[in-house]
Length: 236
Image (cartoon, rainbow, N blue to C red):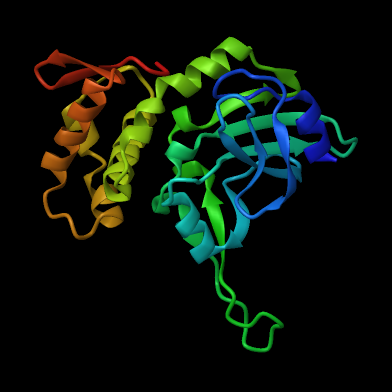
């Protein structure tokens, strides 16, 4: 039912083309595609609000998908007990990295699929700018806002190396968690223990943070104000 509804009501959040099209058969990597720009989308739907984690399929398959050149973006749809659409949220494909995917405990030896290892999508690990509301509390969001939000971070698609993208996404999330547009590099350094835990092989966290801030500046996400100060231009 949710797929039928989406196919009849949803425009492409990347380019605005209406409507999204269903794949004719069950495609392993996506449910919908845009007939204009070619973007692909996978739909996850559930009753009740999307929580801190969303269950997905096999862990290794998921990692292979999000590190490939053909991974889809995700649409998360929630509905109430009366099947009324409450929220529809987009996570663009360029916000997906191994850091937001967590393996679940493998199935027990006596299970029919013994050893199978599923995964969860860690929604709280995704930067706020990577969670774009299309419907919020039952009300559609402005199409122009959705399209702009997609364009604001499209530069992330230029990061082909998954390690480079993971670092950039992690620093973006730290910046957005500060909760205000203007901040200092010292405030981002406060996340050093967390970044060290996420990237244990890197022993030079602060230089890496400064490098990522410069990349974000060069792509119009940040403005450098001088004296170690930055202003966030996107999603501020």
